Image (cartoon, rainbow, N blue to C red):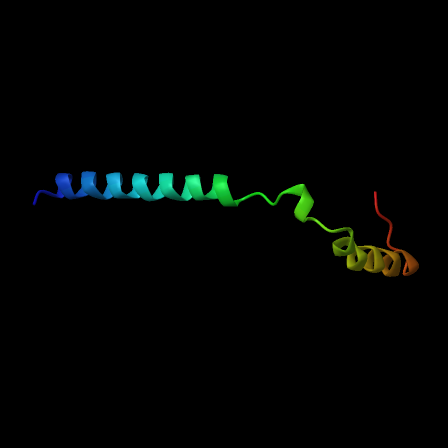
Length: 59
């Protein structure tokens, strides 16, 4: 086969893979707000308090 044909087939296959990954990212990428639990932030708050106690300032 001609290298140009192989290049075209490779480009088309790459584009198809890109489209599939893009669709998966759109459908599976975001976590709904209802799935976020307030207890998830408990560790973050404890770390922030510890850092503030050691003189770290946050904007």
